[in-house]
Amino acid sequence: MPTDDRPVSVLDFDAWKKQGRKITTLTAYDFPTARWLDDAGVDCLLVGDSLGTAVQGRDTTLGVTLDQMVYHAEMVARAARRAFVVCDLPFLSYQASRPQAIRNAGRILKETGAKAVKLEGGVRTAAAIRAVVDAQIPVMGHVGLTPQSVRKFGGFKVQRQADAIRADAMAVAEAGAFAVVLECVPASLAATITAEVPIPTIGIGAGAGCDGQVLVIQDMLGLLEGFRPRFARRYVELGEAIKQAAGRYVADVRSGDFPGESESFR
Image (cartoon, rainbow, N blue to C red; front, side):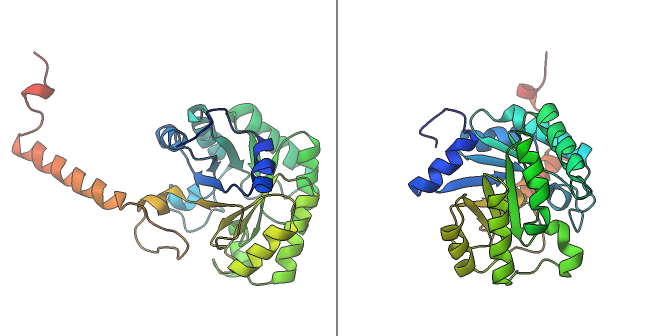
């Protein structure tokens, strides 16, 4: 539970890195989930374009649109009373030009109430990050396995190009980002990057040496069938609980047990 009810600001990320205080992040895509996570003391709520795979049932994040990100981020930001809300810029909403990146990042802040945006890529995205930061919009970076590059990578694979990933993380920091996600990189590499860059690192599949951690909420709650990422710890099997509850409801309706007298009006 949070010890400080004050809303988290971008300045807290820098302070927490200096203090060695770990940063907690989970994805959120709707109002009730975001409210429960906020009440639990989660520091940062990420409205990820992971909604493509976690919510929409797609194989990749590439089909997620900016309108969809705005729709989901507005609900999450409205629910958050303490947590810092970050919204992804989806595929092809910032790669075409710096003006495009500024315009779409600005739209997210204006229309959703989110506090920052996240852009994937390091050296190749540094100019866009700098442009958005210069427009007074906080940016979180994302290097290592960048899901929007899945076609180039040939799948969702651990990234081991140490020199390139280190250069990407440093480029993100030098461009003015306040934090950077390190996804699916060896733990030793992530720890090295964490020690080298001046901004907090948020790991997902990057070991315990990062300044913080992020998980997709559906992975953490056991809501997705099939593939289980190695890095995702399931804290509850909520999907199975939902199936069992729905089964009991079906049985109660068919037997006439629901609704009962206490659930009916006179």
